[in-house]
Image 1 (cartoon, rainbow, N blue to C red):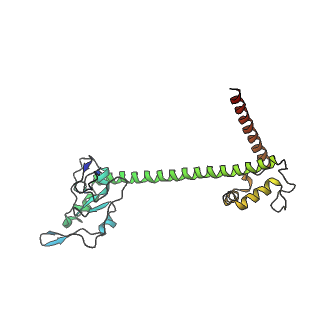
Image 2 (image 1 turned 60 degrees about the vertical axis):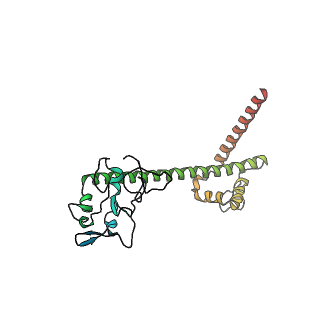
Length: 243
């Protein structure tokens, strides 16, 4: 639908992206506007006065009500129906409250129209796409958080290994079991660090016993990686010095 300037909109140049008054939903990402007024304006039909009822919102969650126009609109038809849709629920607003609940016209008639059914299906598809996108974002955030925590943990192990290597002390102990009173320099230093680092302790506690990266083979692998990193840095510095 063509964008248009709404005469009731603020003077800041707000541009609408759909037809209808500016006190109902403005964008496709909004929810239907459903004000619960204590008393809706009444219109006289013959000898009777009729008005909109807020209970209709429960029956028809797609329904919107404009206080400015004293009329109701259809959210999905506003955004997901063809531009040539001439239904009052999409253009001028429906306000014939006398016929609102008639099966062949009004709200009940609109809900059974093919245009509304098609627009509602498109709206549901749009909402589902937003949910799927939200789940994907959450999964990605969780994945990135896990990567950061793993890096923090491995960095702590590497720092302890580097300390023991610089001090030229043994990594392993004679008895590295949980009941041991001296599990060796590496594990004892790791326990010491975990007592003062809640983030590190939380990571250790969350890892299964066979995936804590404390085995001596992992220690040797980390030491090898650090050795290669040091050699690479030295090689780069030598090449830069030659230039």
